[in-house]
Amino acid sequence: EIVLTQSPATLSLSPGERATLSCRASQSVYSYLAWYQQKVGQAPRLLIYDTSNRAAGIPARFSGSGSGTDFTLTISSLEPEDFAVYYCQQRSRWPRTFGQGTKLEIK
Amino acid sequence: EVQLLESGGDLVQPGGSLRLSCVASGFPFSNYAMSWVRQAPGKGLEWVASISGSGSDTFYTDSVKGRFAISRDKSRSTLYLQMNRLTAEDTAIYYCTKDLEVAVTTVFAYWGQGIPVTVSA
Image 1 (cartoon, rainbow over the protein chains, first blue to last red):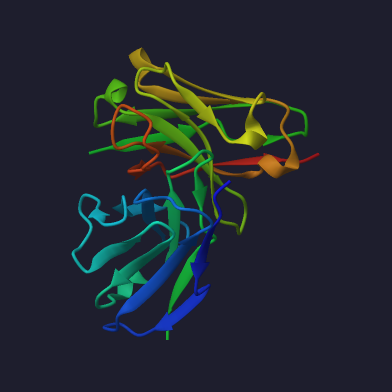
Image 2: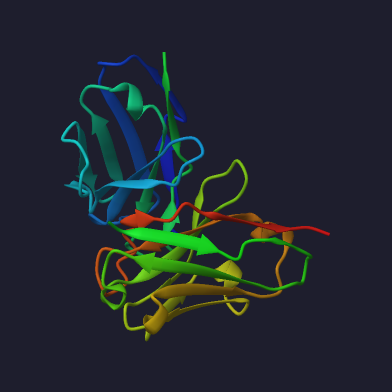
């Protein structure tokens, strides 16, 4: 099973700042990595798939990069609605797995 | 607009069974693979099972193989998850998800609101 390790566990930033979230895979997932956002009491929402493709309706301030085992989700300038938990997920091998999440909180 | 509406969640005793349903609308149901993803209380996300658009291909996480069965009914635009021999470890919110395409890509493009399943004596 591919283990995805996200860092940091919690990230405290202010609106307008740049956020950089990391996801590291225990083995190569090539470019098959996605990012999801989950707000309290809500279902997750797809942000990015296959490393860098934004899902429909996702603002341009969200971007993804990386390859192999190291991936990054960047939010260029935080909006108040961006404070949430973020998960990465790989679809390279079965079983599909998620990271444990990074909580992005308001500083 | 894509809508996924889950139902069937309940409190069930260990060893019991439950069938979850997910009625889909706003897109051609048979053209997309579907999946179930769950989230235990206070925990992260866990992929459970996936099915192709035609229904011919199914995939399961190891912990539910032989106990859970994913299926779909084209005429009803409904996805199902039959869950048998339930244990406390199956307690979670279960989300119905829509894939990006007909084959199982497990890019979970759309999510239902989730339905709680509690396994407890």
